[in-house]
Image: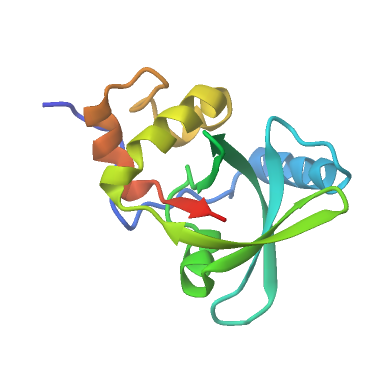
Length: 155
């Protein structure tokens, strides 16, 4: 049986509390708002489920066979909870802002999106998995982590 360094359940959250992570997010968000996408980056805006105020954070937009996904490698973060509550959000790249509808995938349906996400961005998000997961992990491992990594199909 595989031993994991993290618990991958519906309570898993990794915050951007480290100074370097917050600085990185601000730089990526600013560049993306200027129209410079870093390997698919967008600025996601979602209305707060309690305050109603719009909240923004940089995300990686995954496109697989024409279908678009948002993956939350840090787990059940505030943007995930807000998107679940509203079902809609906005993606920005430069001056282009697009409104979308989101549908959260069931754990069993996440595997292909998780695999593609890791293949594209493992160098960036691998640290959020404490070495438990790589782009070459078998399906059993991806199935194990699926509850702790929300995935939304957007249209």
